Image 1 (cartoon, one colour):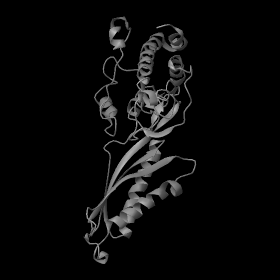
Image 2 (cartoon, rainbow, N blue to C red):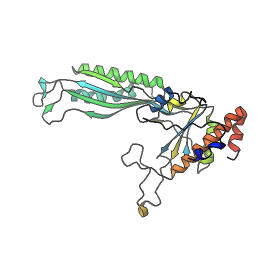
Image 3 (cartoon, helix red, strand yellow):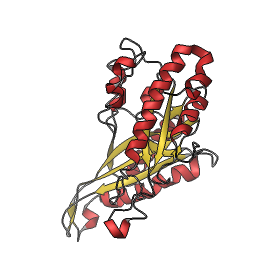
Length: 303
C-alpha cells in the first residue's frame, strides 16, 4: 500500500510477487516459468523475507551464499501380503518391512556421506492398516530429504531409492516410490549483492545490524527466483513477542518453531517487514539507476 500510494514518484518498476503454493507446490517456479522475471521491464534484483521465531523481535538476519536447503519430498508404498494377525507366517508383513526401512534410512546420513557434508532424511508419516487383528497388505511412508547443494540432494534421493528397493527385496515385498513434481533448489543469497542488501537491512533492524546466521535445512521456493536474478532473502526475528504482556493481555508466545502447533505470529513484526520491503525496493531502484557507483549513495540517501 505504501509503494502504491507513491507510485507516481517512483522511477522504475517494483514488481510485487504474491506467491502461491509456497509450501510444497513450487509456486515461485511456476511464476518464473510464466514470466515474472522476463516480463517487460525485465526484473534485475529480487528480495524476500520470512519470519523467524528463533530470533528476537526487531532483529534481522541473513548470510551470503547458501542460506536455505534444497528440499525433496518422498512417498514410499510397501506392498506385502495381508492376512490374519494370528497367522503371520501366511502373510508378508509390510509393517515389519516399513519399520526396517525407517531405521535403515537413518544410516544413509550417518554412514554414506562425509561428516563434513550436511544432509537430512526425515520420515514424518507412516500409515498401515486399521484393525488390531489384521496384517495389512501395504504400508505407506512419507518424508523429506534436505541438503545444502542440489548435487547432494539428488545423491541422497538416489540412496533413498536404493535403500527402499533393497529393504523391500530382503523382506519379499514390492515397493513404489514417488517424489514431488519439483524438488526445491537451495536458496542462495547473491554474494556480490549481499553487502549492499545487508546495509539496507541495518537501516531497518532495531539493533542497527543484520545478524549473521547459519544456513538452515528449511526449504524455500524463493530459491527459484534467486536462481534467475541476484537476490537476497532475510529472516525477520519474531521470537520475543508478547513476553512482557503475556499474562496481562493473554498474548501468546511467539518463539515456537515454524510448523509447531502452537506457532503464533508476532504482529509487531509486520511494520518491520513493510519497512524493509519498501527500503529494498526504492533503494534498489536508485542502485540500478546509478549503476555500479550507486551502492553507497543508494543506501545513504534519504528516501
